[in-house]
Image (tube, rainbow, N blue to C red):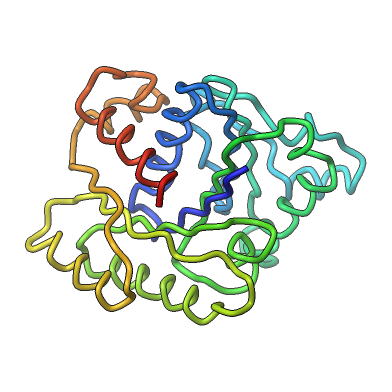
Length: 248
């Protein structure tokens, strides 16, 4: 079982990227699980055609521990196993706590045994890397971390913070940095800026996703590019990235 955490600043296209990777690998016959670790609980939306999943935090609030694994998950496109951590009531509680609860409950309820996935993706908000948000990096969860970024300054800043956190966790048995995924926004000197950041953290760009309006067209359909436009150049870009991520 390969366990991969993908971090990135909010709005960078992280969940879209992860969902297209899940759809790609599931289409090739792999058993895939995607766990959304973002308080917005919309990581798996493109895999379920926009249908909402009851989040781990919602289930715990409503039912304490009186619920089953089937209440936590939904099978999406090509039977990708989808789950969402969820977040606290606005203004109350810690968003990172949802990630901790979700991962603990999935394990307690036997998700990994029942579904026996070949690949697990943790889709994690990377604006902050503290408390629960670092949970997927910890020993027993992800083996590798990848960070989605563009060449925009705020995205690069968030990426540097995530890379720094991984560096600081070195020696504790935490996940290692697998590389950077450049999701292009067509800003000036974009690839050059990201390569400079990679040099600072002794890592590399594992894949480049071009800016393509077809991503937005698929999003409007509540589908991944892999499902909606399987023969497109963008689908080929996600397929290439999936190979690079698995081999990194």
